[in-house]
Length: 346
Image 1 (tube, rainbow, N blue to C red):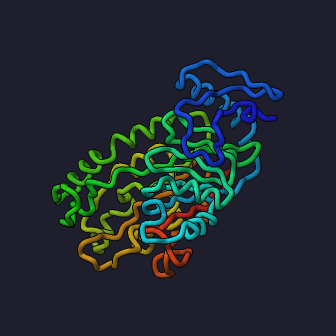
Image 2: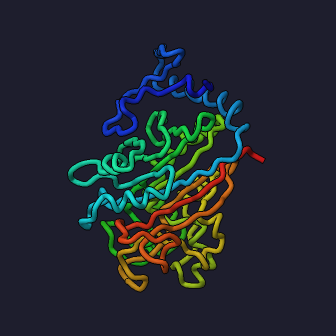
Image 3: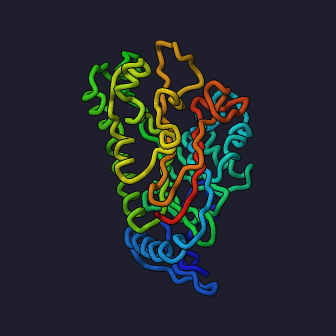
């Protein structure tokens, strides 16, 4: 039994958890007996990271490359907003091994639990209408539940961070004078960056605080999510000159994630933002609609120390808009599917 298998998070029925315990006890599993550690949540998390550090140094880096398919998928108000069957969303998720899910709830509750049961996979509810669904066992989470530990094999555990950042104010609409909530219209890159930081800066920093702590222990990390903000790699001067976007904006949220050593998997696969815009928002409107703006706001980021790209694809409604087609398409967002080789750092 490796070190990580001796160290676990006590999650009641984590395979299909609807309401995870508010506080989790970490302990050592030794020959069937459990010794619970009477630490604060922060101390327990630090102890878990210590064990993960030992585990990574002795196990993960010695393992042959592992193929992992990681998806980000916004269900659209619990996956039933337009009267669609949940089986349609399940068909999308079958393409992946681990999925960061957003908009998990409708008025009746968390439909991602129902989808995970239909698939027979593991589930963890993060709160805030987000969840992680995985073919592989879910063994724990970071204190604020931004990150979820997944045991991909007996010698490989990753941490998937899944986010759904605030939708408003939405800077593309502000720049294009499209009414949305009570946000003012703006006209400059500086104003767009300022409003983006006001909109998403605080939750971004809270997520990154946990991500950095995990990553510093040598654990492979991923970020999935509906960022509700475009990429600094897309709103370039070239894109502005072509008319794809109204002006250049170095959007701060994706910039900060890449600064922490994570790869934007789609833009790594397709570096030309003009030839491959990779729009995920939205299948519901036409490109010429003056009351909308198509954009790439759903992402899969991968740890640049451990990951090399096999492929990254947009999953959606038709061949014009997506690399992989699922019909009928169940969401107002397209999904992103990254196929990654996890390997020892060069």
